[in-house]
Length: 267
Image (tube, helix red, strand yellow):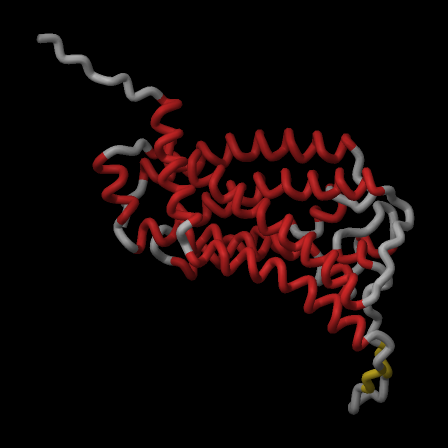
C-alpha cells in the first residue's frame, strides 16, 4: 500500500488561514459592534451639528464669540473638493468626517490581532499548523475587509443622517462619479492602514495599550494625507494611486510583520 501525503501548498495554507480568520471575525461581537458604531456615528454627527448650527458661545475670560458652523450639505462628511478651503482646515466639518474612520479601524485591528496573543491562540497556531507569512497575509486581508465594511457603513449612515437632518444632497464641484471614485479610493486606502496596524499589533502582541498608542500615533501622522489623496472630486487617477500604494505598502509592511514574528517571542 502506497501512502500519499497531501501537498500543503501556499495557496491552500492561506485559504485555510483565511477561512479560520473570517469565521472568527464574523462570529465575533466586536465586528458587529464596530459596524454598528460606524453606521450610527455619522447620523449623530449630522443631526447634532445641524441642531447646533449658528449657536454662539462666549469665552467668559476674553469675551470672544465663537459661532458654531455645521455641515452645509451631506457630502461634506464624506470629503472636500481638492483645492478647496476645507481640504486643509481644522474645523469640525473637516475633522468629524469619514476620514476619522481610519482611527476606528485601528481599534478593531489591535483588538482582533491582540486577542490572538493574549489568549495564547497565536502560539498554539504557529506550533501546530500555520507559517508566520500565512498569518500576516490572512490578518491583513481580513482586517482590510473589516475596515472596508466600516467605511461603507459610515457612508450609508451619512446618507441616512443627511436625510434626517434635512441637509441638501446637491454636489458642488464634484459629480456622482467623483463620489464613487472617492469612496473606492478611501476603501483601497484601508489596505495601507490595516497593514500598518497589523504591524503595530504583532510588535506589541498581548500589550494592547502599546499597539493602540502606536496605531494612533501613526494614524495622526498620516491623517492629513487622507483628504489630499482621496478628495471628494477623486478620479480614476486617485483610485489607481491608492490601489498601487495599498499593494506596495501591504507587501512591504507584511514582510516587516513577518520578520517581527520570526525574531521575537510570541508571549
